[in-house]
Amino acid sequence: MAIPTNNRITVDSVMEEETLRAAMDMAKPQVSVIGAGGAGSNIISWIKKKGVAGGKLIAVNTDAAHLGISKADRRILIGPKLTQGRGCGGYPEKGMQATRESISEITREVQGSNIIFLCAGLGGGTGTGAIQILSEELKRATGALVVAVVTLPFAVERYRYSMAKEALLNLQRTADTVVAIDNNRLTRVAGNLPLQQALGVANELVGEFIKGTIETITTASLINIDFADLTAIMEGRGLAAIGVGMSDGMDRIEQATRMALDSQLLDIKDMSMAHGALIHVVGGDDITLEEVTRAGELVTRSLAKEVRIVWGARVDSDIKGKARVMVVLTGVESKFGEEPKPAHEPVPEQKKRFGLF
Ligand SMILES: Nc1nc2c(ncn2[C@@H]2O[C@H](COP(=O)(O)OP(=O)(O)OP(=O)(O)O)[C@@H](O)[C@H]2O)c(=O)[nH]1
Ligand SMILES: [Mg+2]
Image (cartoon, rainbow, N blue to C red; front, side, top):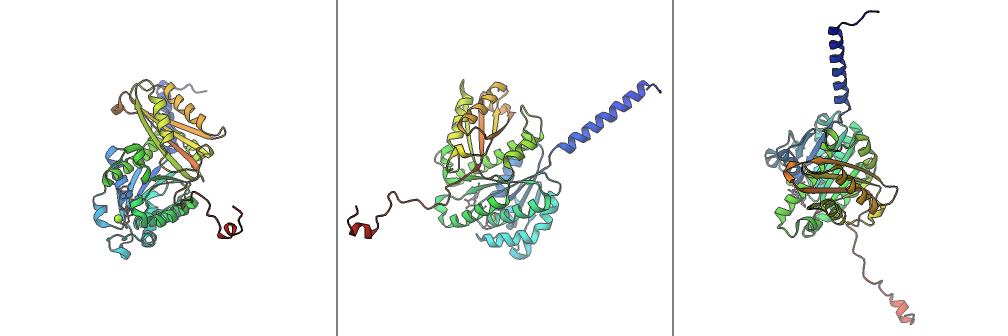
């Protein structure tokens, strides 16, 4: 038997190292993020500005001028024949048609992705229309885990409600999970803000959720989230709600977690009925593993026993001394768009006449 020379051992170990590195790269999920319409493109620009490790950022819009200011890695003007780069003027049907016109170009960009995040502000034409077509077509073309993240219009935008409601229902049928943030609930995390600033907070929330999820999956974090775990709680799960909390001091984890559970940004019917929970903890350099575990325990206690919980944690030296907790509950039911029920059942005239009351 030939005895390997030292030289040979070195060559072998270099090859093994290379094989391992190649396997690691292959195992790393490929992530794409598509922002559709004005709000969607703004969210993409927010993520780009903050920086995200791993993940391709794509903006799609029918509005050429707005697309021009987007900071995305790849910008795609959709439906140029239909809209000539002038937007959809609030008509989702037009947004759908524009997306169909450009679908092969978008599909090409996300080929090979394992996770696709789609984001938009529901209520306009481009984003509302595009996200519905993208969810269905890209799932079919790539088989990726499709997570839609949308905001729901403010009450002052009443006329946009019905379109948003229809889109939300449709998305629940096509995307694996639809994380919805009701703009009317932003006051819970941001107080009373002028509209423009409130929209900025919404961008930040959506952006932070997407960035946090990507980074705990693709980069070495304090605690990583496994792609298989993420799939288990998000695949075919319908609607999801999100809540955030931040605190400092001794009880920072307890306080931030409680706040995240209490400030869900979607009016959900029953929190304890959730199917799964995703917890993100971000802390300064001093955050401990024990604290992260504690956040998991607190969320577990608030939900049904059989709920699957995954959590990830990152260190962010910018928030020294503080802890930020984000809790995403999947498989929930929402009251959004339901007509408010009358406080008392109306008394039928007939019963009154026969003296039954
Ligand atoms: N989060 C967030 N929401 C926004 C922003 N701008 C608008 N919105 C919300 O998103 C909804 C859709 O607005 P846009 O994204 O501007 O609309 P669009 O998809 O570009 O549609 P058209 O302009 O009609 O083609 C609005 O009803 C607002 O509720 C933003 O910058 N951030
Ligand atoms: Mg627009």
